[in-house]
Length: 342
Image (cartoon, rainbow, N blue to C red; front, side):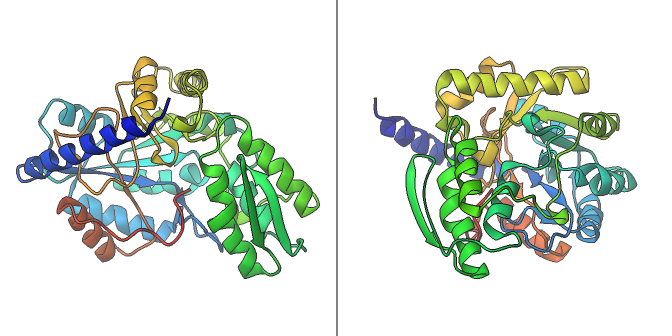
């Protein structure tokens, strides 16, 4: 059965919610910020990283200008129809080691809480799939001058003769082909790329790695950190069959519950991808609410429980962050980023 009618209805519903949120924001509004890494890598194709010194300055700005509060409290207030005015909550997706080593000390220094969403299949792994993908395309060593493979069910082709071509192939061709792939397509695609590249390629030292279980237990012990679920393999949930959606969501929930000692209240959709069926799967797995990515609106009482909007934090000084936050509060649609969201 075609999913276009469902998508059209979902788009119409979104426009209605935006209109309602505009009216609600005149009375009150809050914002959820999304971070991934606190690091300064040499190459950051998806702009996931904010340097530690930048993060420190951003936290100082946020604490001075906004009411920074735990996401659980902010979400509860929004769902009860009583959004605190100009409140901010901070979230992290994935579970990079630098969240423990660089972000947590700064959060503790400023006494700022944060929610950390874990892609649980990578606990203790050497790299996330997109970081291995980056290493296979752009890491040291020679590569064939052209890439022609079937990835994620699509035939892709790109020039890869020099570093610039390989970086464009990564961000414009290969990653988009795998981002919305379901099931085992990502691992199958990586296997084909390993063959093409002439062997496995380990990400560089500044690519970061996922935390181990012991490291996650350390960060979870902080009174400032709440854990949430982010699937097992960091796949686009709507791209999966319904049974696989539930398996990914439930398995990530269960491991987070082990680490935190209590079932997680919230879920984060990888890439922000969601639709009515995936939101229903999250609800049926017992979550109280879920967060998305990149909605051009603040959090208001009009927000849907399983589609709470977030603004992606960037490597930028506080004054630039202030302009983007004010634009979000004003419902100004911002330009699309040059690199695709990971």
